Image (tube, rainbow, N blue to C red):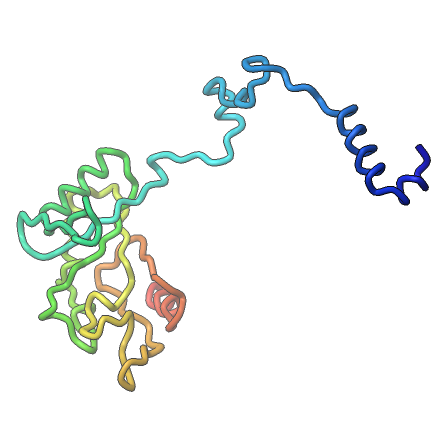
Length: 202
C-alpha cells in the first residue's frame, strides 16, 4: 500500500497501523514462565535490584512529653498515641535504644500557666524539654535526641514566634536551649530560625 493512499484514507491508515502492531506484538508466556517478579525471587536478587531500603536505622520515634510522674495520657486527636511523663519518657528512650532505633524526637506539652507572650519558659534551663534531654542522655547515652525548635509550646497566643501588632509573628529567631540536643529540627526556615541556630552554635 502506497504511503500517499494512507494520507488520503484515515480509516485505511488506522487499519494498516493495527495490522503492523499485530505483526510485531510479542506473545507473553503464561505464568509461571512469564514471572514479572523475578527480581524478587531471592534475597540476593532483591538486595541487588531494590531502589529503596528501609531499616530500623531510618526510624525516629516521636515522643510526646508532659510534666508529672507515672502519667500516660492518651492524645484524643491521635488514637493510640500517649503523652508521657518524664520518667516514662526515659523508659521509652531505653526501649528505643534496645530496639536499635537511633533517635527520638521530643514534643513537649507545656502547662498553660507557664505560657506567656514572651515565651520565657523556652529559655528556662530547667524546663520540661531540657530536663528530659538530660535524663535521657544519662540512661540511654547512645540514642540521638531531637527537639522541635518552635515557640508555640510556650506562647500564650499559640504562634510559633513572637506576636506583635496584635497577630503578626515577628521575624525574631527562637531561643537556643542551654542544654542543646545533638539534633534540632526547626519547623520552617522563616523568621531567621536557621541563621540564628547556626550563629548560636558557633
